[in-house]
View 1 (cartoon, rainbow, N blue to C red):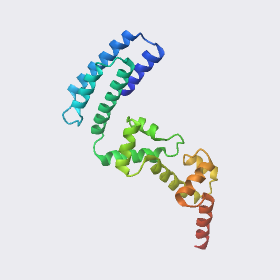
View 2 (view 1 turned 90 degrees about the vertical axis):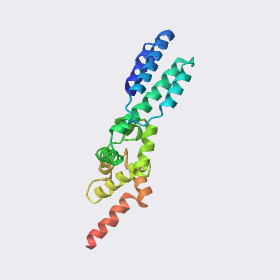
View 3 (view 1 turned 90 degrees about the horizontal axis):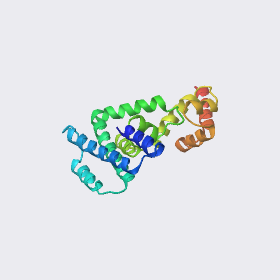
View 4 (view 1 turned 135 degrees about the vertical axis):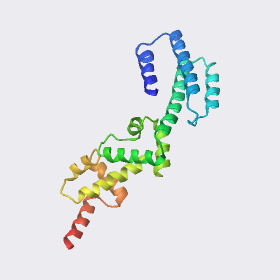
Amino acid sequence: MHNQLREVYQINVLERNIKPNMMHFLVNDLQCTLFRTLHGLSENIEIDEEEIYRCLEQLSNEKNILLRFKTINDLFRQICEKVHEKNCGTSDEQKEAIREYIMKNYSCSDLGLRKIADDFEYSSAYFSKLFKDLFQENFAVYLEKIRIEQVCMLLDGEDTMEKIAVKTGYNSVYVMRNAFKRVKGLTPNEYRKVHTTKKEKK
């Protein structure tokens, strides 16, 4: 629903530049749809309907059409997140799904909070809070730890630093080196030498 509203805005407002009176009709229709959506929600969905109704009543007096559209879009997002959260099942299932996603995609250099939130159909702000509740740390810290663990495993092999950086989602050896030193307290080369020495002694 949120993606559809974003498309409506993109096509009608940004591309077609529709007239204010047409935008007014569009926003009124969306507001009616939001009322019907709230009315049809299952009682099992925990959502503050009174607060949303109060917000919609205040919105009816708002003259700025684009502000009304944005607010309605935000309200739809809140509802969708609650429904999606209910459909996802327990926190353990959510945590496992997110963990598996990260383990599958950590090597993608463009993996970030916005991308994973979009893929799970959450807003960035909501997903950030959800992630911290589930993992007790923020997404960036968790992702960095996963990547560094993978770097450590690859350092036991014979891959070059350039190959290891690519395989673990870093844009450059320099970025990987700084992250590795921040987490491990020594550079990847130093780590490799220490572990190579330990292997030789065995």
